Length: 80
Image (cartoon, rainbow, N blue to C red; front, side):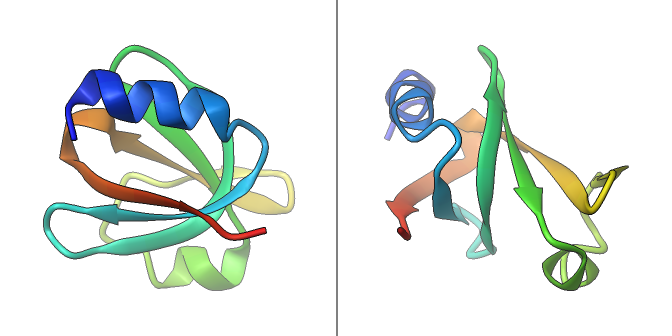
């Protein structure tokens, strides 16, 4: 998918719980809280953030926010 397609899907799934797979095989689960022209911001609970230690996650009260580059996303699945 193109970055534009990913942007459109992320906007559609805003504030919903998703699983995001990158083209490098990494899978992240969380809630989409923001989307801009280059990134999607995924809020993950501290348990899942521990497994994302190599990302540029930053702390948000009660959770961690992981910025993911739209260009690198392979699949976005709605969880519930």
